Length: 538
Image 1 (cartoon, rainbow, N blue to C red):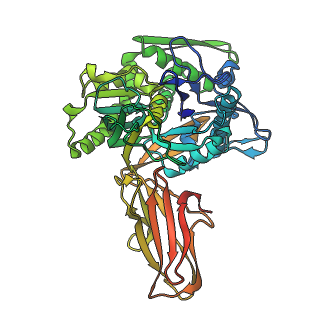
Image 2: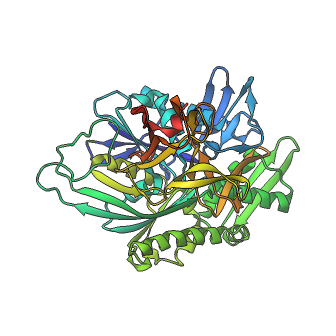
Image 3: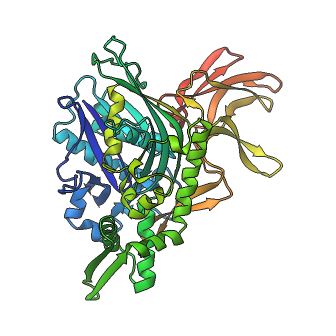
């Protein structure tokens, strides 16, 4: 059994590889999945906490069916993926005497999915079971580590092998029937915009009955006896930002608040989402609701032109063009020009916005733009890596060591592994360190994952909304071990003395994109740490 989960800000998709049809299929989980005639069975990423102490929750479509998503209630959570692994500005909610973090909310949501999968018989513990989790391009290791550990704590933890895959890379594999080699994936969901340039090479089997390449997995590699054609998906360029449908919802909310004096509320958010969906098919849309407190009836209306003007006023298209140009520049360095791109794959609910599609036609002819399965492409494409597809990828973030910058009188970061490094790394990067004072008892280092220098993203509460704000002038860095106990990489016995090399610290990024550290005591000729995931040090 091979299962994939695309955990999204607005919607989540769970899929499995059907061995009978040899095709991916989306799983329908009773109570969680939204079932509509003209839409796939996605799971709304919603959660309502009925009891924090008893961990009693409602998740997915059941939240909507019970009308819990229309309540102005601190027990209701939406868009919580954006808060996972970030430093929240403001106060987290306290429910039933418990402070509730977004990591806990996300774990409850994934637990609800795992329980329903187990109840429906999709988790039977069969040999060779595999789970593929997809992550945004711009995700930091803190988020990826949380996702792996959260899954491991659920019934999904019984699968034999787990792997992570970038969302747009997975999406590129979903259109297997398209005979296109160089594709651009525009993955525009509820919380992030990721753009990737992927080259897909098909390689014929050499008569051995084995695919030519596999992505490395947890556990042993299980070569199937299938004679299928194997593929290599090589990521040539990629970039991502925190911009998505949730931001557009907030902009529309502010527009109607200013225009009609309507206060923000969960019900308003739901109505705005419905208007966006209508505008993807019609030139205008309207919604009417009745306020049972004031007994007033309010009508919201919007047309595509006004919608585009709202997006323009927030620099929406400038941000899209800036991100696309980053990817195209990387592509040109790899020898791929704009005209070499054979297909543009639209993924994510926000990619259905007509203004986004019109923006793309400024760069590509309409016949190159593929938009047949925006909501399921990531989960379906992820399943392909278990069918003999090798993914060749590189690091979007680098890693560095924190030091004290005497000139600027502040902490700064010295790079040790640069962005763009292919992974898994074969050879580690070594640092040789000595003691700085007499009888030094330990060696401490803080290691960080280094984002872009152009800006940072802050996540904060504005009323009951989760809002992101881009700041400029500072690098986005996520420290992996800046906490008590984790900074200490080596306890020196005997204590260290200045003037001699004492420890060698080796860093390597594995196939799961985790930074692993080994530490050797050169004096004692002893290995103190061996390939430990840095984010999990304690």
